[in-house]
Image 1 (cartoon, rainbow, N blue to C red):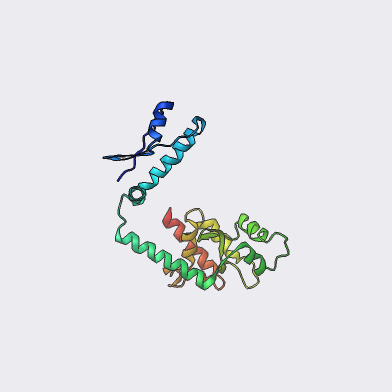
Image 2: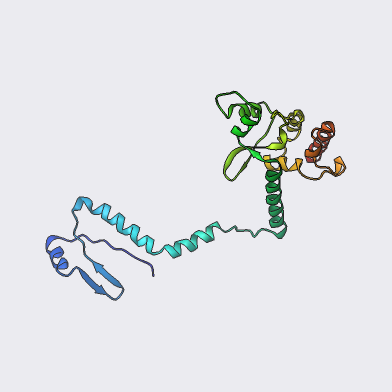
Length: 210
């Protein structure tokens, strides 16, 4: 049932007559008489309207669900690809870690007072990159740092080649995907042993995306 409200201003005699019996039953509902000072009437009306709106919460919820439901149904392929990407992100995080700025500072043994300064400086210089996960900004995939916590040198070159062609997560997952140009190896597995080959694979992908 939809709640409806009607506000009527009564003169003194009419108000006294109505207030003698505060509630009047009607076929379509109840009439409830409330006497309030004139200057408070707008506020009281606003509160009562809000209450009436809340009585239609179920209908509002249905409308909201319809509004939020995509107008175009996702294809099975799109759903499967989204699932694969989610699994790949989880695998990357589990194997290499997603480091915060403070983690990077600790790993690199930075003496900077600002724990985020080192990662911010390296990122601004194009030596490392960040992704976001779970609403947390600037998380750094751990494979781009060497044992001493310094950026792996070839990362900067690969960023120059690919960063403007892929979004951050696509860029990160390129490193952890099997690459036919590397004989089936993942780029991440050859960052230290054959960085030139990884850079060549990145350039080949950039050409493919042109």
